[in-house]
Amino acid sequence: ELKVEQNPLFLSMQEGKNYTIYCNYSTTSDRLYWYRQDPGKSLESLFVLLSNGAVKQEGRLMASLDTKARLSTLHITAAVHDLSATYFCAVDVPSGGSNYKLTFGKGTLLTVNP
Amino acid sequence: EAQVTQNPRYLITVTGKKLTVTCSQNMNHEYMSWYRQDPGLGLRQIYYSMNVEVTDKGDVPEGYKVSRKEKRNFPLILESPSPNQTSLYFCASSRQGAGMWSQPQHFGDGTRLSIL
View 1: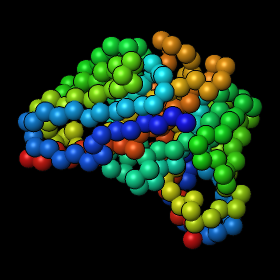
View 2: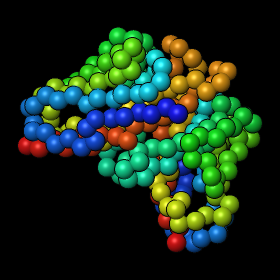
View 3: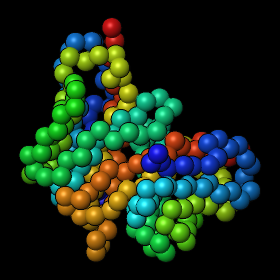
View 4: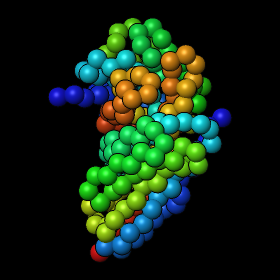
């Protein structure tokens, strides 16, 4: 059974600081997604990482994927309050034929304080 | 506008009273899925569908049914709801494909179910 573990689960940081959220998974996959969820809202896609070494950046967020280490990171640069949200990683693995199954981590609740 | 629409958004009901949560997408996506979100557990997949008339169990299918008679619709059915099915439910869809054609899932706004 695939396990997807995020660390930390709770992160409180000051504006202007940098930090990294980690996503480890237990089986081979080269398809990983990062989502953001604001309180009471739906999930919004942030990044799609489809190969070893993939790096994507959007504003103050940068995501990377190391398929050999089964690790993805979401790096936050110079945090601002608007980044406060819950961040989920999700891993896609084959489930037979051309089917894929998406498994989510438990999420990292990020709070950026002034 | 591309979207996934769930109804109802909120529902309070009683144990044993059958209910259906509808999900519809207008993006002609092949893949659709239902998740439940519970505090401390993240999102767990209930059922998914690769295309019309093709469905499969996710991680927590017990107590739920689905059907996929049309490409755009994927209703979630609780035949005899119980309090442990009180949760926030999300429907999602995506264009499914391997490798470079992988697309992220688009999520609906969620349905908050309370089973008393």
